[in-house]
Image (cartoon, rainbow, N blue to C red):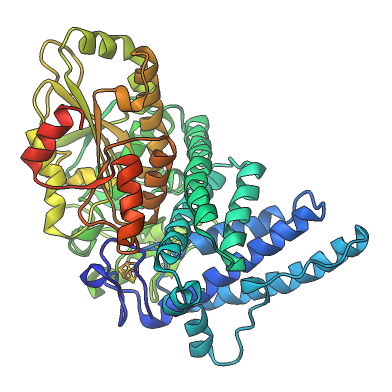
Length: 552
Ligand code: SF4
Ligand code: SF3
């Protein structure tokens, strides 16, 4: 196996024996094969479209593409049996699409397009060999030029993130055919394996652009179903009673768990990236949604073990479950781990039953709270106050501290930065990196009622942060780069990769990225990003802070 798609990759270069994430060589190879076949499906989608097919893939087929790709993200699906199913289904679909393409060409009285690359790749009987043919090493060798390869991988991981968000939006019944056309165009380009630097660069930025639409759909989908988030104080410690924990990003699964546990004497807690769910009127209305439990994903082996009830993991991130909680952890959607019970169709009866059979928390823990719900609606609702505070010099600067958490000590940079931010500045948070500091008391900006820490939401809510920045830029008649706003992003997985590409597409300068830069960026590609966007690695907190306050 070989994989370097995420920040925690072995020694900052690549996982080659097994993943630092726990991904086995077997699953890594299955993921390589599945992704290669997904690219083949995309090639057929493009060819069918070119021959006049209105909707080249059915809605169900597109959902398969979304789910199978989402499953290849870091910390999503480690279950070899599920990977076999994905591969078989992709192979069947490819055969069907080849027939459909032939029929479409005949109907259009045109020659059948001759596709290459992934579309015509035959895996053969030896799976090991097949996987090696499409694995990272072969991909690198085929591409020959390391900088082209670097961009191929940047586009691949960016698309994975985009597709994960498109799946989240589809769950909330928001899709846009033009997004799928562009997604297939870019995935199909990767499948055809005829690369050039210029097209790849364009596609990386285009993926960032398309992702902005995807994240808008996602934001609209969540607000349409649950109302726009409102500022909310929520408990972060346990209350006595039976309990269920819901982890990941999926609001609909959380809603279904809340419905299934209603009036049953079971308390529901959010975990990790589901914390911002407490800000949605349609979810906070449930009195048994009692709080958020634990910290970010990498602490789950300790925290899940200590949680006295069943646990549902709806999306990334899952880690290998310890024996102590293996019999009470469940997966849904693209998530999988061998030995973990996988539930379908939001049928949470087994989870409810298990919660009823367990004692739950035997006593209340000392009360502790945090806040969330500062999406664009809430922040723009007080925009006049924020703008006046900036004009009167009460707010000096904004810091967007966003992105993933992870187990490395260097990630304390973000918590230290948040702690060092002067009193007359506002911190906006996004995603699970905030767990290192979100329970601290940040108070309000002196002389105003504006909280110093505004949690915009999950990584899925990046659209909200961009809306806030755009509205401020409009009010001050400048662009995002002209605002007193700095970005410090923590990167782990592919959702962060696409958000970075979206910010680059918007022309955002001076982003600080850490704790390590992606292993797949060659020095030349990195230089390119540095020259064009002044993208830089995080450094010393004090020095970075001083530079950020000067707008650098
Ligand atoms: Fe390694 Fe990350 Fe790939 Fe897991 S996802 S195998 S940790 S690079
Ligand atoms: Fe976190 Fe896994 Fe990326 Fe949604 S939950 S941000 S790492």
